[in-house]
Image (cartoon, rainbow, N blue to C red; front, side, top):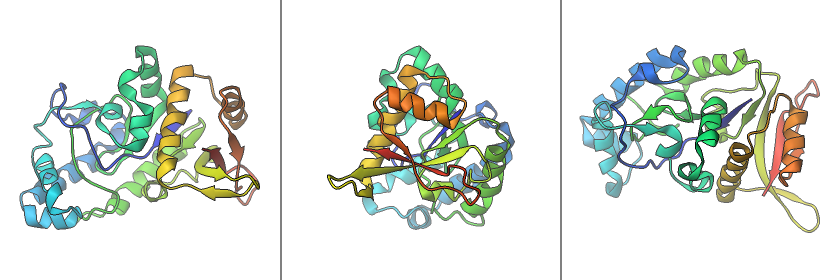
Length: 253
């Protein structure tokens, strides 16, 4: 099983790890693309005015440009600890025990706009780059969609896709016949479902934490649904592909 998480705009500062080493990251087939994007991101940061515009930053966020300028030299920390925000606050990776963190490294990946897929404990620096950022001469969709899509299509295990639709577009897993996209919904007293926005991130973080704490063996969709039921998590089959196989799951928050 592979659980795919979206990144977050915000990152925790600092770290105690050695500076960025692209060869130390998982999914080594992405190294060349990563190197191109790191070079472009650092080069853009040399022009703060252009960088603020390309990264869609406010004046108060201008310090993010400096993060990008020094990202090759700045310290690293595990990806699951680097990202902050609603999803990652709910996941609260820093309070997981060693077994849960090892399980996360084997089964959880974050889809970064800068690094592509990174495993949970891969060491990365603080940076600022979003799915819709504009790097000179490099399109993020063009850079990532093929390579990430190929990695996901080649996997033989179940893919549980918790990414936002914007990051799915940077590397779809739909070609994989055992991938499921998880959509967070709320159900009212009349049984009507509605998609959630802000609170869907918290639900995804709690869902992932529950999985890391219980460390289930999940090989099939039925395994996933059975585990969720045993954990008190409402996970329902949603929309289906044209061939009738499950395509979406609804996580009831």
